[in-house]
Length: 608
Image (cartoon, rainbow, N blue to C red; front, side, top):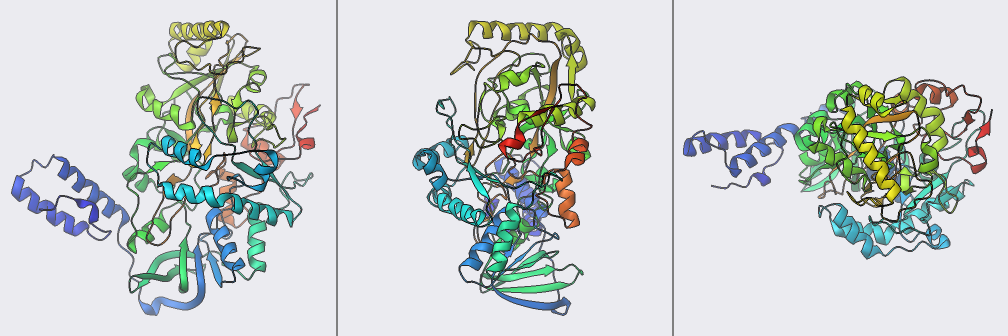
């Protein structure tokens, strides 16, 4: 009898149940061995995917002919449409929303002209080696190598399109002194999009630049059109049946191919629970795109594609929940959590016993997976009120960076925006607690006061000694002035973009000690390399902080047919932060939108 259940397809749940009955007759009810476990997993997956819907020919009201059909007009889809149109093909892009979900405006590459101009040199084979190491071997190296070989050319193409609109593309450089324990690579690129000073919104987005270019090249976009299923003939995918804005079924015949770029399934809780339940236990917030429902994945499986067997989500350690909240799906679904942007910084981090439990410097995911082994699946971050002074000295890369890069490129969210717009709202809503003493802080957090006080004392002792003899977080230590928080955070390598933090602890001496109960954000689930037989489903994200992330305000815009890439204006920023900035006479005003880049002149704070 065959005991390998990996070959069963999406419609084989009935056959598997019959096989279970046969097995029970042979070995009784004691099906507890490895074969039974594989059987149960196979049944769960087939029931999860379901069967392709049956549609009668009479229900199809129109047929459209094209060379290339692209399903999903987000980060991956828009570039695919533009490339096909540029090559002279007849191409149609369809998307379930009134506009596409936008392009991640932080893009990674190797050997772009921007990197060459700054002197950034990356050994692609070293990159592949480290990508494999960071992924624990769950990686397809030929795909990573393809990216290494072609990404520079792709970024130069993006730069050309931006230059046609008089928009500069920035390279997020590394630092001269860039040696750290976790190998990282300066691959980031971001457009310096023009901002309307009156509204605080972008005048144009990267998605609009690419879409308009594709349209000029002859591409067509059918929005409010959702793929229902792929169609095959003689073993080949020939097109799709879709549902249009009127709820009618239409057929798209694609003579040369179909590109499925519909993203992941982070908005599909049933799939998340079935395919990666361990990650659901440690999350508190979701930044998944609204279209990440798994529909495209199921359609590919119905057509005979194979899904990678190892699943993982892209995680960021930047969500805060209140002391009385628990991480998990219920909290995520409620939307009741805070966006703690400085969570990746290496502050002192303790568990529910008030004890330090790991080296806080590393990848974004390190501490989140470490939470799996801690009470409540969470940790607490301790930092002082003068945190800005020390954050500037931390060695941060990629999206976690709060200060400009050495070549002048702006960070995603500057420290002023977090301090003046985001932190006050987190405190007001109880996601961050303030206290004048460690004992008071412990009481507010529900932590054992004696232990927390001892942990802080030990942290400060190590700082004064200039050596972390417990977890050795002090590689490349700069003692001068590092006080206040705790150490370096974790930064995470997103497939192609490694963010890292170099250690530096600091004493907790100042008043107004603050904390947050850290949870992570869940962007698009990453099935590493997606579905292969009919084209790879790459995670719909760029290689940076906003990869796969989209605020609820932008998600609402998408669903209403409004461009999702506009940053919030002053009033929206005030609302998203939970209230206006402090009314102190020394309040620093910044005009940069959260998660956006602005002109350095605009970024300079004004004293009001």
